[in-house]
Length: 257
Ligand SMILES: [Zn+2]
Image 1: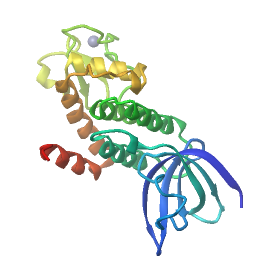
Image 2: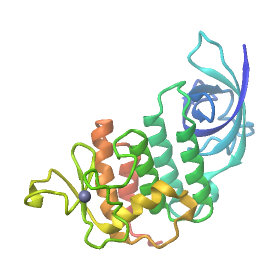
Image 3: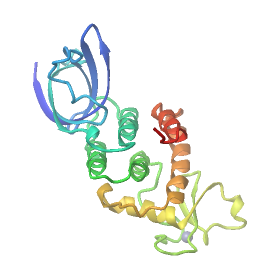
């Protein structure tokens, strides 16, 4: 039975038998795996503290071709989302759930793995979770081909950079169009209006890492992208992800103690 070691992101866990856990994790090199962590629910288990969603771990696991579940030998903590402050931990579950939804089993996806670790690092450095969420969603949608690879008008090639008049639309066929190229009355254009600020964010997300986003993104832009991404992701997954409800409830409750 071959033993593999890899860097991985924990996506979720659930109980198995009396004291074990099943761990779903995305490896950097061999895609998403599902494995048994023996005795993980015992208080002195070697897995304690390293199985929260979005934890970056170094794992060793045995894999048998005929078995669906691998056997986890250890999961050594590299970086924990628990180190971040505020609402970050709820967002960590949201990111982990989305990766789980998007990653098919055993299909190597290094880009998705790197996206996950980069937002985890940015979270630890204190980059706002709402900004990271929009960044993360942009990349997921782009990797799925929902967003076009370049943030330019599909007709005239305008890059939407710093033009205050460049209000644009993500049409239902998945292209971006600048206001000048949208023919006839704009309402005829079956798509979602995007403000110059939202386009500037998407353009920056395409070129920069998540740690390069400061607190400079306007709340209105984040809200606009959140609304759009929700529609695109729900359509793509054909349902809403579970952690969205938690995020919504968290917002509704005022932060009074
Ligand atoms: Zn155009």
